[in-house]
Length: 290
Ligand code: HEC
Ligand code: HEC
Ligand code: HEC
Ligand code: HEC
Image 1: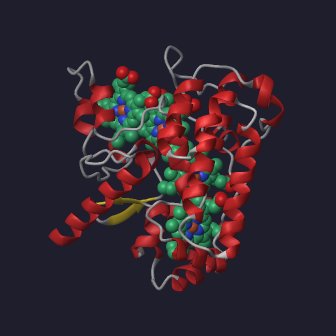
Image 2 (image 1 turned 90 degrees about the vertical axis):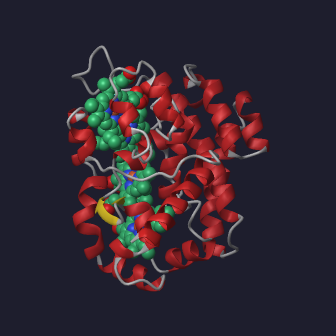
Image 3 (image 1 turned 135 degrees about the vertical axis):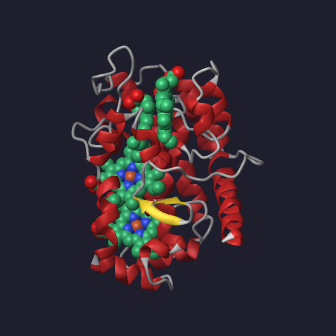
């Protein structure tokens, strides 16, 4: 048990380092969505209406799931280290929910007490320092979506990803941040109108659209460096081509195009925050959402 814990902690730290470049960050562990529910009832209600929530009871029963899990040499999805990294929220070593709050906002064991400390005026900033992903950190949020949705988790060995793809696991190169974040997943109960799940303005969507492309570019570039499986490389190259096409019209994207890293992606996200790119990408914004 102890060894397993240490392993998990090391694994989580490696994951954080890989995704966010926060080398030396404290080990991260989940507390689970129930721990967020009492204060974030509305967000929890939204989550319960998403496939992220419902897949927990369903996906392992899928015929395809059984074939894919066998192909990577494991027997049960909920016990497979490979499947668990994208399909489940692991609490104390056990898969307890589908992708949930902490899959997108960062594992909370290290920040939940800080977050709940009402006497600390800097609780959000201090929480971020311990791995919390705030809504203002658009690139980090997008990059997180891509790590699961592009079949490109930084901890997923390239050959395993390719084996999964060859055995029927989806890799959806068309995953686009606005289309996927503004449908069932959307929770925007921002003050002052905290009872209303607000829609994004077109300007906000245009920023999300661009940051999503930057995150896809970084994720896919990293992914193709890990295997030369033709089918996998082709799918990742589609993501790269689309991102390059979109970003090449945006001067602020020059750095991330030349050097697709998380640092450049994050800087791009900061540089374009609050601006309006509907003139450049308005016609590419989706009109229907997942
Ligand atoms: C004790 C009540 C409480 C609990 C429990 C709680 N939160 Fe919060 N949370 C708040 C409050 C209050 C705010 C708004 C604080 C602010 O913005 O200054 C907040 C803000 C946030 C934000 C930032 C909002 C933004 O714009 O991005 C996120 C993300 C968040 N919480 C996630 C979580 C997650 C995930 C959990 C469970 C692991 C959780 N919270 C548990 C009270 C709570
Ligand atoms: C890198 C992240 C990642 C890993 C690792 C991963 N999955 Fe998935 N899986 C996803 C995502 C994301 C989807 C949803 C695909 C979409 O909508 O584009 C999905 C969908 C599926 C589906 C539904 C397929 C369909 O066509 O409806 C099955 C079955 C599945 N995964 C099984 C597995 C199994 C078994 C493992 C472990 C061997 C695994 N996955 C590992 C991310 C992952
Ligand atoms: C699929 C990823 C994902 C999941 C799962 C998720 N969030 Fe979020 N969350 C986001 C994104 C993206 C935003 C930023 C939304 C925006 O600004 O448009 C956000 C914003 C927020 C905010 C600020 C907006 C608001 O509604 O007040 C809070 C608080 C929050 N999330 C809490 C939670 C809690 C609690 C859970 C679990 C019940 C959760 N989130 C699950 C991605 C996610
Ligand atoms: C920890 C991995 C993980 C993260 C992070 C994640 N997802 Fe997912 N997502 C999944 C998996 C797995 C599924 C498939 C669930 C199923 O259908 O069984 C899924 C399904 C979805 C679906 C339903 C797709 C459909 O075709 O109906 C949407 C929408 C979605 N995710 C949006 C997002 C967005 C937006 C983000 C980032 C803000 C995000 N996800 C982050 C793993 C993840």
